[in-house]
Image 1 (cartoon, rainbow, N blue to C red):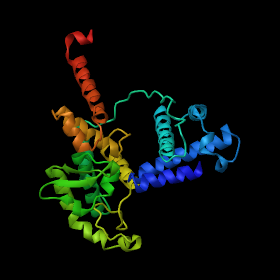
Image 2: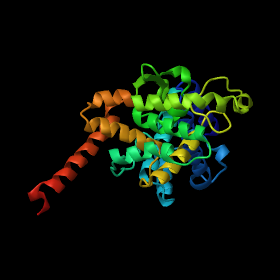
Image 3: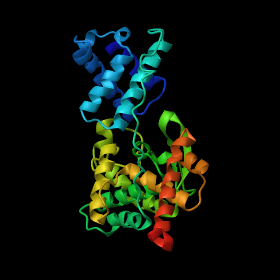
Image 4: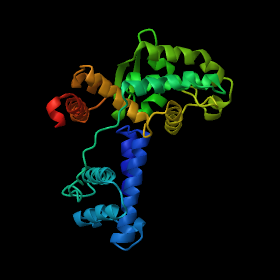
Length: 314
């Protein structure tokens, strides 16, 4: 099992061009599955477990163990997907003749609507870095550009931190981004985001070359967003930046980079954009992934109806 997992992760990285975040999640899920098989199901060293020893009952037992551990249904579904994909790979490579996870039903996930910000909340959040008293004006400019671009372009946080200046055309207000599955797309953005990026670019060089960040990491590219040492900003740092300005703007907690992406899509839908266009802008491979935003719009219409219609309040 360990060797199979290693081969599969190499396949995801080298041939499928999976993102580092996807690779990390798959590795965590599959190692947890292998440990369960050895320790709890077969009663042997996890390194000695062979793929042929796994059957559907083992996979169902794994899901039951995850339930006992209090793991959310959505996380269980993700782990089952990783296990299914692993054995699908094993079948394709001729290591197995059947996928033991194929017949196992995916845990039913409660339908929840993605969190998004209302226009007033977004404005307060975007203005927070410019309104605050800060110790380093350069970082405040960077943070304003991050917030503006997340909202203006609906980028995933991994796409944001991987951006280089060469991928942005400020005059045309469009950027090129490589998303999931190594798929490239062009995304437009508005004048406020362009202005924030220009404002940040004015001080970018002083941060990039005023520290040892670039030389220390061997990074010769020109990342758009830098940490205080001059190196490329990380996903975690962006989350911390958003947490800081959410507190500053007194916006309800629970806002993260993906919230800005949800807000981008929701506001487009509310303004009349069609789902196919939103799908292209978000970089979704399937329209069904984008359709969850229609539920948001229905909820908004129902809320307005209940508040406004005289017979709805009886």
